[in-house]
Image (cartoon, rainbow, N blue to C red):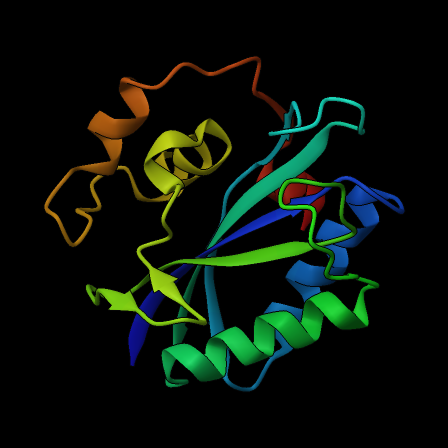
Amino acid sequence: MARCFLALGSNLVDPLKQAIAARQTLAASQQLTLVKSSSLYQSRPMGPQDQPDYLNAVFELDTELTPLELLNLTQKIELEQGRQRKDERWGPRTLDLDILLYGNQIIDTPRLTVPHYGMKQREFVLLPLAEIAADLHLPDQSLVQQLAASIDSNGLQIFKRPADWA
């Protein structure tokens, strides 16, 4: 069994509905155990600013899936919720589910990089992660709580607490 953390982002087609549906799908999966959900946060878009604000969250999960099986599952959920993969890197999307951490593993393959390559620079990842796992050490031994304390919030704000959006 591996402890994993996933990041969620959505800014199209009713982002609150997208986030709730993704959380429900993850929680209902026979291959996952949803341990915790962060609050749902509202953030400015990364990259092109001519798009709606995002809703973001982080989930803590247990799974027996391999990292690539978990990636396949998250991409299937994204597609089922209308995700269209485009070349535009930070463009708008119905749903984005990223594997942040998979146990203490370091994975660097053409399909998957874990820990997620940008997690230490993204307030919309670090602050929700710190909310549910402040004492977590990343594989490089950096402490989530310290990383979160040193990042600019960039206007990130809580949109809904876990009990209000679950």
